[in-house]
Image (cartoon, rainbow, N blue to C red; front, side, top):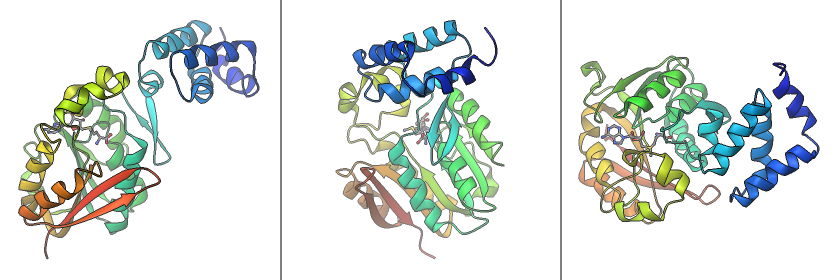
Length: 273
Ligand SMILES: C[S@@+](CC[C@H](N)C(=O)[O-])C[C@H]1O[C@@H](n2cnc3c(N)ncnc32)[C@H](O)[C@@H]1O
């Protein structure tokens, strides 16, 4: 099959064809809400008919679309996402938006619990001249983040929260974004299978009330933030007041920001000057 299979397909399938129609039907039956958009993405990504069949079959079997494509759309960017790595969510764009509003050009940015590194990468493309650092405990996430963060001029460290960071970063971080796991343990069973089965538990499980990792991040954030620096985490709307209280108990000045459009809640803690 010629290398141009995918290019031919993407234009050929702008309008409906029997093949596209059959894929849409298979995806719809499998429960894909955006079956038509997904069919078009798979048709454009596949290099050969066998490739296409393989991709559609994996999607029908429940693999996240982003793991099949190898990328996710985030803040207008294509972020590389490997199998087993948390897929960046659209709602998290609000956290990036809030962080970008607080960041000055040249800010020192840390993307903690970085997963694919989507947040840090997006910030580096939005805020001029940032010094970018990222860290995650999962080796697969660290490998994936390096594919996104290094081309954006940043560095990625592997380990538990702040442990792997260079000492030289202490007291210098202006913007600390941390989309930690925040699903209460008991709620994981109610998540869609895409997340429950294909994203590792360490990416989701936030303990009894979902805030265990945020407690640990907040407890040490003051040591790493510059005076006036900000910690931003995502939480559910219900968790946000508790997360804000945790920030206050850790010496940060808390504030809650909300986007109804994205159904996103961000808790921001500022280190006093
Ligand atoms: C909800 S995912 C978010 C990933 C990414 N920030 C995003 O929004 O796409 C949480 C991430 O935290 C990482 N993580 C969990 N516990 C951690 C820990 N103790 N230290 C560092 N990273 C951790 C997981 O491996 C996972 O990549």
